[in-house]
Structures are given as C-alpha cells and as structure tokens.
Picture 1: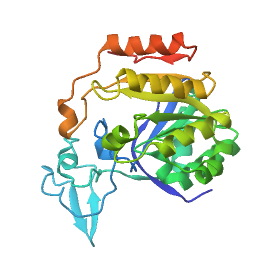
Picture 2: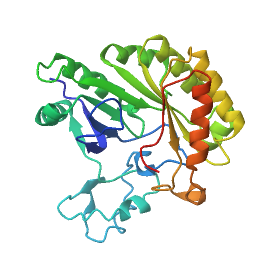
Picture 3: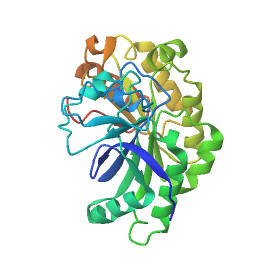
Picture 4: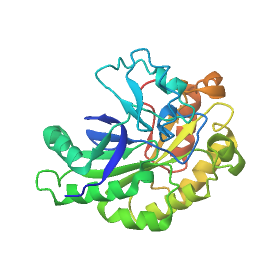
Length: 287
C-alpha cells in the first residue's frame, strides 16, 4: 500500500453536486490560482509555520513546537479566527491523510457511494497522491466500482494529465474567463493552459463537464458568453456545461463587495448555449 499522504482541507462523505451520483469529495489544500472570487480562499496557500495565527486563536489550539505549527483539535471551537489571521491564505488546521486512510473511509460508506471526486484548492498540485489513490481504488475489490473524478482549474500540463488519466473516469474543469487579461485579473494566471487542458481532456474522452462562473460585470457579458459558446462548439458542442452564479459567501477582499449573479442572466446564458446545440447545460441547484 502506498505511504503517500495529502493535505486535505475538508472531506465530504456524500455530495450530489460534485459529479454524477452520490460522491465522496476530498478538498485538497493548495492552489496555483489566486482567484479574487474564491469561495474557499483558505484552501489557496500552504502553511509556512510563521505562527501569525497563534495569537488569533481564542482557545490556544495552535502552538509552535520545534519551528512547526501544531494544532490541537480538542481545543478548537471552529471559530476560524486563524483563517482570517493567516497572511498566506492557508489553513493551520489541515490534517494529512494517507491513501489507506481514504480507502478505509470509502469502505465505510461504499454502500451509499457511486464515486469519489478530488477537488481543492487545486487537486492536481498533489498529483502523486491522486495517482496512488486512484490506482488503489481500482485494485480494491470492494471499491473498484467507484468512479474516480478530478475537479480542476486545468493548469496541469499534458505530461501530468497523461500520467493520471488511465485511472481517471472523468474531469470537471473550471474556465474562469475567456479574455486573457480578464482571466489574469481574476486569477493571477493566464488561461492558455486551462483551455489546452479542456481540449486534451475532450479528445481523451475524459471531459465530463466544463464549469463557468458568471460574475456580474466581468464574466457574464455578451463577449464572454459568446466565447464560451464558440469554445464549446469547437469541442463539437457535445459537452456538458455547468453555469455557476457568483455569490459572496466565503469571499474576501474586494470581491466581497461584488454583486451576486442574477437568475435571469444565468438562465438567459443557458438558453443561448442550448439554442446553439450545446449541452446539456446545468444550472445552480439553489438561488
């Protein structure tokens, strides 16, 4: 059994919005984007053991020992004051899990699950763990029926995808914006690798869904929706699209003052895509 471990910010033992069916979801820590609209900004950074969060904790659940941050879950009240204090958008409470830890969890819940999704942060930043976990699931008689999905921003290069796709059943890929400069403003990165990944995954038959976040005044305009339509058509149109509506829940900084996306605008974009023969198009479950 692989001894590889991953930093995992959160685990859901069931979810019906992170791929098909009922799924276990692992939210891996760390991201190579710095999205202004991120709903989970504490998953972006990796703890550098600076200790700035220690004084912010009202229950003394954090301490430095031998230069390493230590977290005592028995003292923690989940107030999240440490997340607000962290200067690198990290989470000092993140534990490490081994491949065997996750297999044990999946066996416990396997009767209710149709698959597992690794998300983030950006899951592919811990690619060796994903490869080992997916391989172990595929070889396990009790778990091999579970489909294995990755939720990603697509920044992984071709060699990385090649190394993991044999053990992967589907990928959900977020496109943050189509205009290059707009994408840089929103994420701190170019969108070229993300678009290339979408093409590669579609050609490999692994692109389960393109996800697109509609942010009022930024990514919901006619130009952006037209670019989304043309890109989907370049993938032959037979691609599932999920339109997500921007909300300020969990968002920090300037984006916390941005307006929420309207249902009418999101549904109008969905109609445009469907009229072009693209789809199916999925809408938010809740407004």
